[in-house]
Length: 353
Image (cartoon, rainbow, N blue to C red; front, side, top):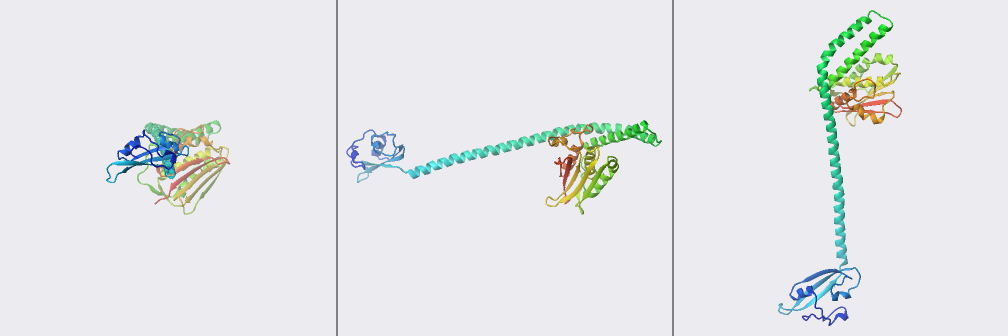
């Protein structure tokens, strides 16, 4: 009622009771709707003492009642509701929002982590390539400068040794002259490898028949294979598709792989060279395998770095140059150490369009 006395209540004990201190009730008598939220047990007003269900949330509504003219407020209806379904839906929604935010945060963290890690890996790879390129650029400049100065006297030394061998010397002298010829050939090979670092890929690539290139390379090493008692097996698929590339560069790659295989078998062994098509990937696969001592798995990737070698001799640029050449042909070169021993080098190059 207007005198703040309860004239009716669902709880008969409150009928006739007067409540004075109630800000929401004051606003309702001024004609304003009042809404308040609370929890049973947290009694802040005398009229809330009758509520049951400890810890249950409720909503308190104050509805002003006007006279017939709709001007003066003659009373206030105070309603208590406990919409548990609504509160449960709100709490569920809040939990879903927090869960979604947490999941989104975790996903965002891993996405950013992947992006940063990938960027870091790309930067490291580019830095490594830049260092290798700078190193080989310097080597290329130096080798180009000294190659002409070395090749002429080296050719003279080799020719002199060959002329001396024609006199059919014997004993220690023959062995020394033979060593001079072989070491001259080795120096010539090193110079050729150095010069290959600076030689660009030709602008116009040729249609290359790999079966012919493989046959030529094996023929070059026939004498050495026989001297070292190495059995060579060559299996090339018939009608092998052509590839686009530089014949000289591909020949250098195969020569380098075959030479490495021979050096890994000083006491003899088995050399297998195979070539076949991979129709699914539209590639040609070439495999050069030996039965030598093999390479530790942890050192395989290091062998593709410039000036890295597992042998006591050599400059350590052969495999680096081989992979660089194959990369220019849009292919791949990989080394593997089978469980049975030995080393296997696999080249994959796209077939010609």
